[in-house]
Image: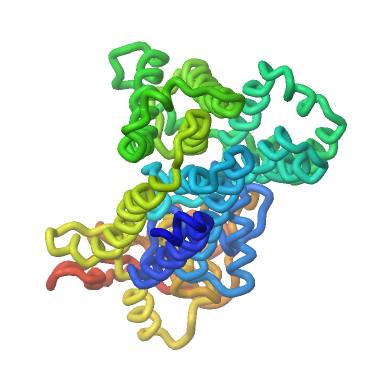
Length: 495
């Protein structure tokens, strides 16, 4: 603890250790993939300007890593935790830009891991949100550097962050807009916004975002339809007007988003809460306004779209401003944070490390109480069994579900895995010559034919779909005796 007091920057190394531990436990946790992981494994076959409802930055990174090292659970975990580590590091650097107390800037950085979507949801199964979190942290670093000591470099970093943020998550756009609004009341800083260096910053942001922006203009429904549908989920069952229902849901989600970090900061600094609440500085005003404006813009979007369903993960890009705001309040109050750093670190370690250990153990424990998840589905055993009954490997695998597609891609990394509906610009999807393995979830064992969408795809390629449907029941990973998952499959030869 004395070493931590003398060298608070050790926390950077501890964060690297946390991400390495997360990668290791994920590799050994299970081979089957969760929802977002499955999608990334499937999409790693393609390099497109757009992929559907999510921007492409994360997909591009995964495509590059898969191209260099192959697609596997390891490469999926490395991309996610590598981005998470960079997000934490740049957040810490942003805090250190405006907070003189080194221990307090490390507390601000650790505060990122008190947000449930980060210490829990990102480790369980999120992808694009991790990329957007990295972009937010990089933006905060460049933006705060620009406000404090403006240089062309800081403007360019900010521009790069904006460009990457736009192609990471569409709601990222709210953050730079809120930042500009937050600075306008500060007379001494307004000249940072009206500066010639903004021109190259905006140019580099536009250059990064341009390919995907062009794709969005030509595929607007595909880019926005899913998210809009999710935001209006359950609207037909609401009693209150949709706008009011959405605002109530937003309020509850905001409370859930900030409750844990607020509680952790309050617990560690409870003796100085009165002084901290009253404290104010230029940085508390700017970070506080940013957070308030972000939530205000979200509220306007909720009302304008008559949204009734708001997820906690959608707000994490804005809630992540809270630890920085609280740290600036503590700094303004003149509270010595050095003796509080070990306690804060202990709480964060309990939350963050405890979560990834819990996720690791749950794979083994859940089947004992009869609960199975995506991670228990025996894709590898299915693939090995089916390939053992056939003379040659498939020229392609055809499925009608992205979760199935990603898991089969992991187990057949050299084989194209195709979906009838992807890519949306290509219709029909062209099948190669040779043996084609068709696979589907086979709970409906009364089915005598292939799934309708696959039959349609085969017909579009001039292939008869009269092949016999087979079913294979495979024991779950770590499952109880007699518990199996059923796959449907068929071999089809295309001349």
